[in-house]
Length: 125
Image (cartoon, rainbow, N blue to C red):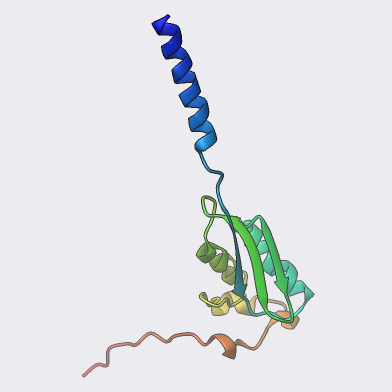
C-alpha cells in the first residue's frame, strides 16, 4: 500500500511539475531600421526571421521593424546584427560599408541617420 501511495504521489508531482513549467515568453519589440523600398522591406523581414524572429514586419514610412521572438531562440541584438549583415543600419548596429554597397541602388538609403562612431586612435608623438 505504501508503495502504491508513494508511486501515486510521485506521479502527481511529476504531472504538476510538467504543468508548472512556463511556456517560453514571446517578446514583441520595435527596432528602427533604415531602408527605402519594397525590396528593402522584403530583405529586412527575411533577415529578421533568419535570425530567429517568428514574426517580422517593416514599416517603410516609419522605418520601424516590429518583431516577435522567443528569448530562448534569439535576441534583439542578434536580429539587429542579421539585419545589418544584410546591409541595413539599425538603431544599435551599423551595417558594414561592404554590405551597404552590395545593396541595389534603389535600396541605398541616406546613412547620415546612423553615423558610425569613429574609433579613436592613439596619436603618435
